[in-house]
Amino acid sequence: MTHIKLVSKLLLSAIVLFSVFTSQAGILTISGVYQGKNLYVQNPFAGNMRDYCTNDVYVNEVKKEYNVASSAFEIDLSFMKIGDPVTIKITHKDDCKPKILNPQVIQATSAFSISSFSVDQDHILWSTKGERPKGKMFVEQMRYNTWVIVKELNGLGNSLMNSYQTESFHHSGVNQYRIKYLEVDGQIKYSSTVEYTSTLAPVTFYPHRVTDKITLSRPVEYELQDAFGNVIRKSKGSEIDIATSPTGVYYLNCDNQTFKIFKK
Image (cartoon, rainbow, N blue to C red; front, top):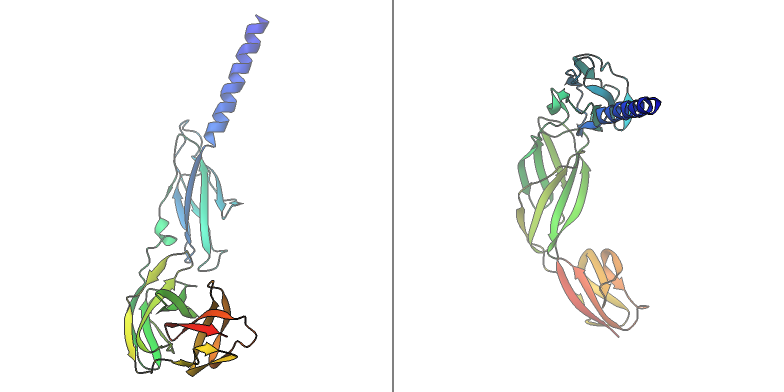
C-alpha cells in the first residue's frame, strides 16, 4: 500500500512538473523600430480560466515589469530613443496566446520614395519623401561593371520632404548613378538609374613601357593592380610612381577604363 502511495505521489509530481514546463512553452516575438508609440496587448485567460495568458515580457532581451495580470496591458517603450531597433518577446502559457493590437507602430511599412533625381555637369541632386529617423543615403556609380559607393550621407529623416545635393563624380562618356537608402531596421530601397553623358575627354597615358612613372593626361582617381589583381597603388593625380615596383605586367584602372602596363 505504501509502495502504491509513493508511485502515485511520483506520478502527481511528474504531472505538475510537466504542466509547469508546458505553461512556459509559448513565445510571441515581434521586431521593428521605435517610432514614439507604445504597444498594447490583449491578454486572454489561460485554459484553467484562472490565470492570464502572459508570463513575462522582454524588451531587447531585458525582462520588464508590466502589469500582465490583467485582460490587457501596455508595453511602455518611452525609455527608448526614436529610431532604436526594438524586439519584444512575450512568453505565455501554451494553451493560449496574447495578441499585440497595434504592431504597426513599430513595424510600419516604409512609405519611402525618391520623388526626383537628376544629374548635371557638376551636381547630383535628389529629393525624398517618407524617410524614417537614422536612415543613410548612398550615391552609387557604375564603375568597371559594378556599383561603387562614391558618397555617403546621413538621412535628414523628415517624413514629408528632404532635398540633397552633392558633387558629381563623372568619368568620360556615359555615367550611370543610383541612390541607395538604408533604413535603421535594415530595409534597403534603390532609386531608378540616371545616366549622364560627360563632355570630359577620355584619359590617356604614357609610356606603355614604363621605367619609373606613368603620366596621365589629367588628374583622376586611379587604381594600379599587379598581374594577380592585387591593388598596389590607389590615389588621385596625374602621375603614378612605380620606379621601385618589380618588372612585369600591371593593370591601370581609371576613368572607367582598364589599361595594360609593362614595367621594364
